[in-house]
Amino acid sequence: MLSKRFCFRKAQPMTSGILYPCRVVSQFRRPTGFGGRCATRVMNIMNRAQYNRVLKELPLQGRILDIGFGNGNMLKRVLKKGCRSVYGTEISESCMTAVEWKLLPSLQQGYLKLAMGSAESLPFADACMDTVYSVNTIYFWESLDKGLCEIARILKPQGTLLLAFYDKRFMSRLPLREYGFQLYDPKDVKAALKHNGYTSIEVYEVKKEKSYCIRAKRGNV
Image (cartoon, rainbow, N blue to C red; front, side, top):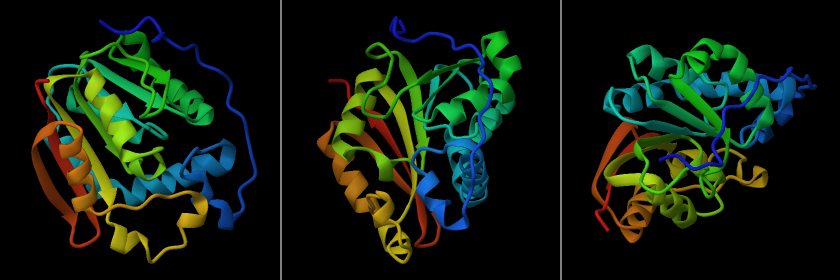
């Protein structure tokens, strides 16, 4: 069962903001206003290959959770694939409001449910999700261990986790650390998954020496 903390949100009017080009990267963690909308569009372009890889791995059946759905581009594609029990969490109120309007028909039909929440604090009961995925959010988690532990809590035994991210070596070329990015390579993520009881870990190279998608199963314990 889902936690009582999870509830359907009513759509709210969108707010505006001012975008300065040098601030686009700073919007990636918690997109806000007009600048945030621009930043999420940039992310959609950057993430396209990772979206495709994650979509390939997603089943049609079962409860599916998107952690950090941004402007809802991936949620829209998951729903278009035919998934009918889709959930999403965000830490950005601006993104939440935008997606509530963008995907209102799916919300009204009950195919989609949205809630505020971070990877370290998910508003769901234990062992209620079949599949969890997150694309390019691990840089902003308080720690890999905390996020992976919380995701394991809500995944059913043998449930699937899909994490897509850019490699540390590639990301290190960009001035990201000053904006709070924590960078990882596949070995870091794989080690953290094992430490938190995940099994059947598979690493897929999405873009050569640039981006990856890791698939893992929650252990039975």
